[in-house]
Image (cartoon, rainbow, N blue to C red):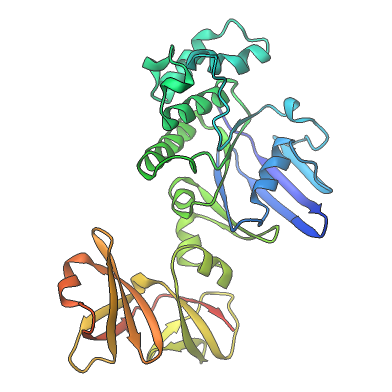
Length: 341
């Protein structure tokens, strides 16, 4: 299957005094998987619901495959949806749940397709099981198979993994990406989970107050955030005092480049990633280790430098040398940083 292009063109949606969507413009390439990420109330779920036809926009258009579908009801938009709640029929088997959407579209003779979709999601041996006989992850796979069985032009995933435990969530997110790549359906996923968004998406859209702050490849969202909001929201950043000097920012004695587009002068707050901070034990060091957190292969160390707290990401093998109270020096890598004035 070849995906279709999708364009959310100038969407506005207001709930009382709240602007859920504020002139949102989003273009999706055929077969692309875009993840919308942002804080609660930023408009990401509203955007998905307007695309699905479950909400009406006050202004703007929804264009799918070059066709304006703004006025079409949800059941005429040929989209597959997977919700946070699995929404399976408890009295139907896994196979019957997947067949349900096909029957609604008059495709009763395609039982073979339902079985093939269950095989695609790794549940070929579960066709006769009822929802209560399956785990949460297995139920969500059935929901995904049901959405794909109808061969939707667009696949919409609304917080599909948030109800699952951490290990199953990682496994299923990787499966979703594999399946989406194999099938080629243009897909929009809405999530609160930053790791999930960065791991599965071709591009990530970070939303704030109904607008896109940035839409870019996951690595670009993390490494070169377009705004201080994106830098602060995605991943962990130190908020360190600095001074802009000759187009760079001076932070803890280091001169760091500024992310393109950032314009500021004088005193600022620099957003520095923990992995850009190196910590070295030194008797005359300007910092002191306050706490350390073991996270597996890497760990986080919090250091005090005067009245400034700095979090660094270090190899766990070095923790023995970085016990609380140890004097250390800090080195900041010259990685471009975002600024708050």
